[in-house]
Amino acid sequence: VVAREPAHADEVVDGVTFTLSDLAARHGVPMIHCVHLFPDEETARLRCLQLEHNRGIESARAAVEMAGVMRALGIAGMRR
Image (cartoon, rainbow, N blue to C red; front, top):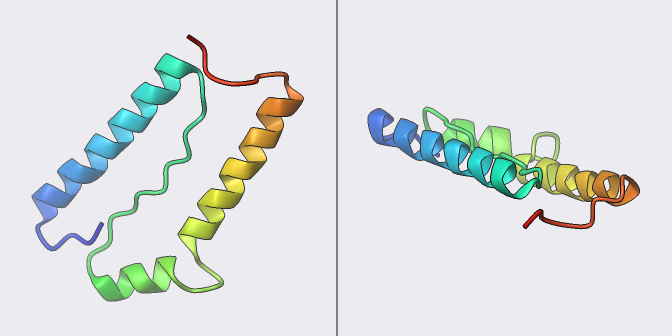
């Protein structure tokens, strides 16, 4: 999220964080949180779109690894 309007950007990030935490707790499934708040588009591009620092790729790898861990632990899916 690029903080062009800081108060609104904070609300968006807080809302996503709360919702992911709530979903993880209610369903017993880990959630990968990859929502970042940046002061400008240039900083966002530097932090998210470079090969050395691609937050999307890092989050996808973490999700795949977590799925493997859950499978190894015998946790097949969501609690109902």
